[in-house]
Length: 152
Image 1 (cartoon, rainbow, N blue to C red):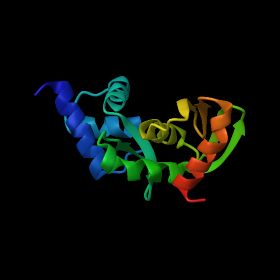
Image 2 (image 1 turned 90 degrees about the vertical axis):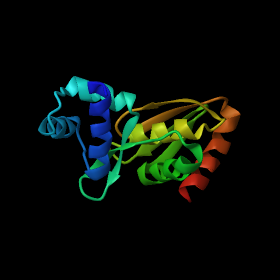
Image 3 (image 1 turned 120 degrees about the horizontal axis):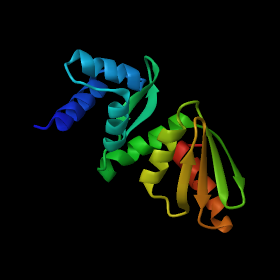
Image 4 (image 1 turned 180 degrees about the vertical axis):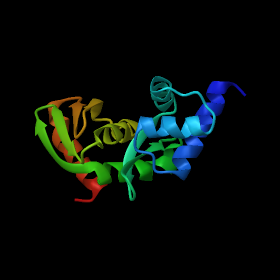
């Protein structure tokens, strides 16, 4: 097995067994297991493994892996959206979602994974997601769909 593959398997194992909130913490745990891992290496691994952050009972947030199995993941995407959602507002064909601090990337990834037909794309910050809606006539329908997903 290649070093990169072994390190990435170790990362998956670590995030499944521990609530890891930062790249630095993940880097330290990998080093404790004998892997030569810098923050830059861990950052690339996180991107390649499609890891994101979501709420944790222990540390506030933790890294998780969002898999590609659509049927299994649909409930998880909805949960990420529900857990991270605070409010939303529209500006013609832009929908702005406010999220719990640190959750915008996870919410944007969940929305992208849901492949909502009204959404052209998402841009996420720390606590805000901007959704480019295909046309201004679809914005209200998208808001209703999101309300349905989050249960409000």
